[in-house]
Amino acid sequence: MRVLIARCAILVGLVGLLAPLGLSAPATAVTALDRVSGPAPGGARVLDLLDRARVVADIEHHPGYDRDCDPGGCVFGEPWTDDHDGPKGHNGCTTREDVLLLQMTDIEMRWGSRCRIYEARLRDPYTGERMTWRDDGYVISIDHVYPLARAWHGGAWAWTPRRRTAFANDVRRELLAVSASANQAKEADGPADWLPAWRRYRCTYATLYVRVAVAWDLPLTTADADAVRLVARSC
Image 1 (cartoon, rainbow, N blue to C red):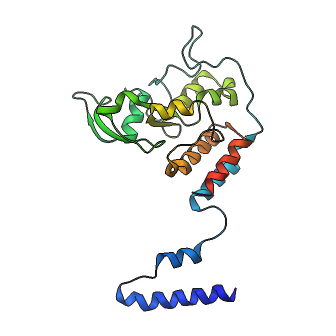
Image 2: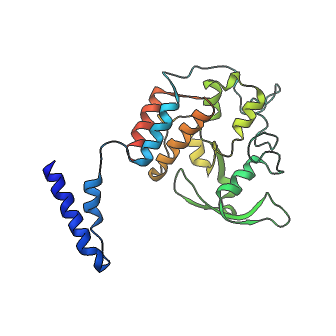
Image 3: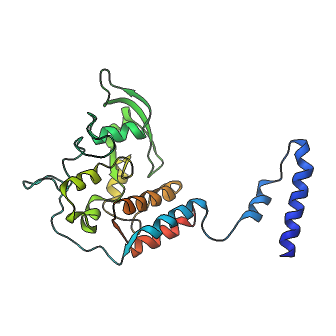
């Protein structure tokens, strides 16, 4: 304790001597003394969300899931329908178009359209790859952060069709524009089995995943929760 107080006194004196010169104490010294055990501030937010999540040992299988529309109908509504009650619903654009417009940058629209993009840029959050709509539009996908199949088995099988449609088109929390290859690699996995290859995005991804689970009362498995805690340590 005396050593720590002495070091703090030295730093305070150093800051006082350097301030009149327009300088500051070395950042490494401040970081070394400020470091505390436990998660960083971003990690604390993830853990706060995790405390509110429903955690189960495993997610039981429930028959009836089909992302494609079989003769009996679409269990999560028509893909990318504009007919939903959430943000951007009934605005004349498909949900896919809404997500691209919200998440891409340097957007140039097709002449005469307020929904269709002519050119734009995207930093794939899962890989870090820089993409453009002109060159890569055909391999840009919209990913459900909490996979639809996982949601179905986790409780959405018992929801009303309208609620399932709202979930599948939740542009505020659930949908991300990503590369098709990353989307395919993820499949219906949770954090225990899949994390973004771009490590800089893992904390954000874990936060988004848990936030969706809490907002829609969907479960995390114990393994998923353990994986989120591990990610939180580096946030």
